[in-house]
Image (cartoon, rainbow, N blue to C red; front, top):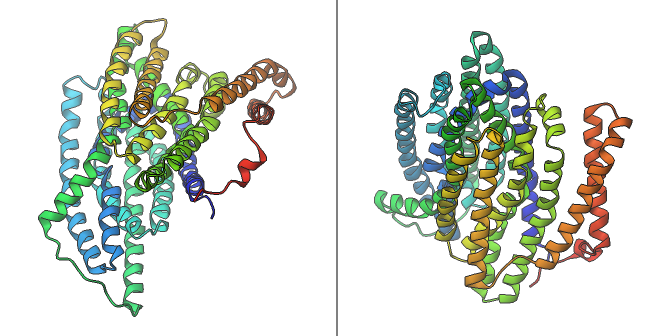
Length: 516
């Protein structure tokens, strides 16, 4: 039998990469178009959007897929349609409510002095319609996932991102002559056409599915009468834990939006310079971290059912095997990625964003690639084992670490934006290590230490080769893009060779089959 666990991870990784690549192209184009200050204005607006979308719809796809899959299991298509109708109606009302909340919050945040740069007002308001549209989109994605039809979700995500990228760049370019604030607002509004396109293609897939059902000669299964109240309660009770577990990124972004500019002002920066610093950190450095953790994010989605299945079967050996392979896959990719970004932060900034000033923030945030991956995988393991509340509690505790270090380090002139990046590193490290500690305490599961040692040695040798041979390559390849590509290829080659020499990678790894 083929290894479904890793196959699912690789498929999800490929899909996530395409969406992230489109997003990265968007960031690069916007960074060159708006500059650090304009990206900073956009980045002030975006965390509020992320927070409200996470609160309103982060857990909806998972909850919908569970409810729909129960109906699909007994061929109750009528019940599935009723769940979709009730849930979409309820969630549409919730979308309107959250959009109205955002419309009210924006003036309060700016007039109350919480958001320091008032030029972000238009960008924040431009994102409000997208908040309302995100919830029905989440409902339809969960509906199709419940029938194990992944194509609609994948196509809608890609189409949404593509439409969004085009709209953001075009609107920013058109409105930039009216001022930097209007250019940032145009970029922010690009999320609205993206959401409309996503919802439109999902409705088309739904219409096509219903047409196909009408043509089938299939005896319908028993249909359960579902009340509005019971459906709403099931949806909320299933979505709430997932929502809480997914709030870390928008909450951290919101904290950065408020505290980073304020503490940079305390360090002696001007308002414009503090906004620019936020742009370097949240708008340029953090997307690279997220790009580096695409595989672990996909891995996390595959880990939950695999671990839950092993536990349900009472297979301790299978549970340990899945845990070891999940951690090993994460370490193989994230350790060298963190080392590489740490060494090449400034060249990456110059090539991708056209400025070297984001380099210090990128370098300082490089450890977050490792710690965010650890947090994602350990959270998935805990959820699969049934410890769903633990990651949420650990995230809340780690946020205290984040706020304390952010408040202290960012205001020190010698550290400034690097201090904010170090606070994020510590935040993610605390959350991931706390998860790891709980895994060992309750289930005696931990990192594969021998693999970690071999991978770390390989990554360190790779880093030494890149550091030592970098100046030579720079002299041979004066073009910065070619030089960076050569550095990356050199690092990858040395790392791969070291993995073979340390016997961390063997030919048998590529022939492995799933255990029964």
